[in-house]
Each structure stands twice: as C-alpha cells, then as structure tokens.
Length: 112
Length: 113
Image (cartoon, rainbow over all chains, first blue to last red; front, side):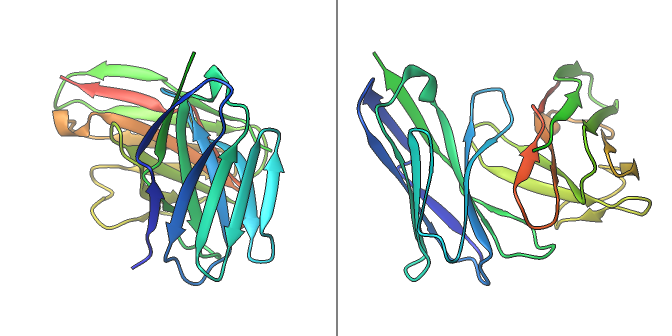
C-alpha cells in the first residue's frame, strides 16, 4: 500500500534554532517527492520538489534531501523564525494520473 | 506557478442544505482536484475534476453527495449536498500541469450546524 509517514508528529523549537523533519515513503513507482508548508487556515504552499535523480534541493532556509534507495527524505530548516510555525507536509507522486500520496504532516511551533 | 482563487473562504450552513465552492485558476492547467482536510489531518482526495466530462471519484466519495463541474480548463466547482455535521471540514481545490508541482487554493472552511 502506498504510504507516506512523517515524524515527528509535532515539534517545538526556539527561534533561531535549526530542525529536521523526516519523511519515509513506500510509494511505488516513484516520480517525485514534494514538501509543502501549510499555515493554519491556508492552503499548502510548495517548498521543494525532487525527482529520483536529485538528492538535495534548497529554497532559502529550507533544504530537502532525498534518498531514493532507502525511500527517505528530510526537510532541514535553518535559523528558524516565528513565521516558520506551520504544518509541513511530505507528498509523493507515483507519476501519471495517479493521486498524490500525502503524509499527515509535522506541526512545527517556533517560539521566542 | 499558478494562483488559485477559491470561494467562499468559509461558511456556516444548516444541515440538509447544499453549498457550492468555486475554484478559479489564473492560467491553464491540465488537472484540477478537490480535497478534504479534517482538523489536524492530512489531505484526502475527493475527486479529479475532468474538463467537459464527469469527475473521477475516489473510494468513499460519490457524485450525488459531491457533484463537481469543470466547464473549462481554469474553473471548477464542488457542491457539498444535503450537508450534515460530519461534512464540517476544510475543502481545498488543487491544480497542476502534468506531473509537476501542484498548487492549492486557500481552502473553504465549512461548518455544518
């Protein structure tokens, strides 16, 4: 069964600290993996998208990694800001017209 | 990228009534989708909105309850019919061009009383 598992479920960190969120997937075939940020009451916004051949991609203070062999991805946030408080969702695509597979997200709270 | 406008952003409805949610994309897209998101949960795909033909529904969702229209490449509607409190949720419109990045609307927060 195609699944995406994220950990931790929630995380609280101090402002300016770094953190890493994890994503494991069993989706097959694999086309690409995406990380989204979802602020409370808003729709998800794309942070990164990686295909099989990419093992790292950055978007400002966000850096995503992908290990397609172990089917793991991580999202590293550097020098966190209060505005980083949100849910971060890992999404895997099997390609074609198959539905995206969503993780349940990690709820990040950055506190002063 | 694509900008998706979804309305209404929120509504409180009486049980037994219906609500139609509109989704407008600012550029042509290949695929449009409708999702439901329960509080604290991930997104669940309701259906794929097909232009000019019937939507493709996922298991657990039926056309009579969630009729969908997509008259052209940039516009779609989702109707939540004969609502009950269990339909209270966030409904999200999404669009993509092929198997690339998906874009999401702001969501419609529906409360059924």
